[in-house]
Image (cartoon, rainbow, N blue to C red; front, side, top):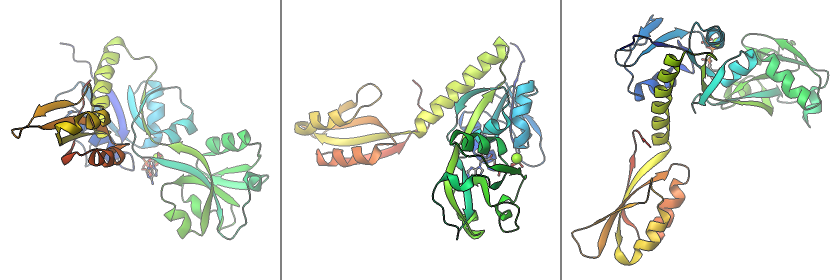
Length: 287
Ligand code: ATP
Ligand code: MG
């Protein structure tokens, strides 16, 4: 057996780390993390983890120092590194938004024409404003962007927002969304065939974990006269399973439903006569 490992760069500590580690653990990959550890080799999957500052990850993947990386789309697009986006990971969701002092009157994006905007994301900010026909001056700063207007550095800012709490406490209001972000898995563009096949195994596992997170397993009881109506509401992976109960004329139905339309389906099932509905989480879903 070959002893090639695929090397993946993940954030050492920050808003991407916990969910990244959780995802790989849910994929059944065992490895040590935490503390001052900067690298770790899995004991049961051909992968080596590098724990780094997130800013360095796209460059390392482009250069091939790491084969794979987990990074916020915002950082990736800002740095414009030449890597492949393998898949969206659905966590660390946030948005890059323009904000101005709360007492300013805002009408539309023309507000920013000729103004100074402080940001850690000059490329994303300029690309957006240019696409909207607005010319502004970006002023790149690496942190504490929210204080820029109050110290006279800029009239507005463009920064990462998730709840808006930080903006509010700095006397700012969000006025326009520039970019939507989430964590993505990236890969070097020229992986060897051997590493590509390890990546395929990894993405197969990630897909199974993600499918499970987006679905629920539903078990319910139904009387024979309501079966057709209820079965029509349950898509299932193939079709719902139907098991006769000890009580004559009653069945137990088992099915998988999507998290997205979960409540609507449950309500319709009750209206159609379903009883004793159990909803269970799915750990993994293999197609
Ligand atoms: P590092 O020390 O590794 O450079 P950092 O301070 O640059 O870390 P974090 O604040 O940990 O970065 O954010 C990492 C990424 O997480 C961001 O680039 C963004 O994609 C995402 N992110 C940022 N803020 C939030 C938030 N409030 N909620 C969810 N995701 C966020
Ligand atoms: Mg960083």
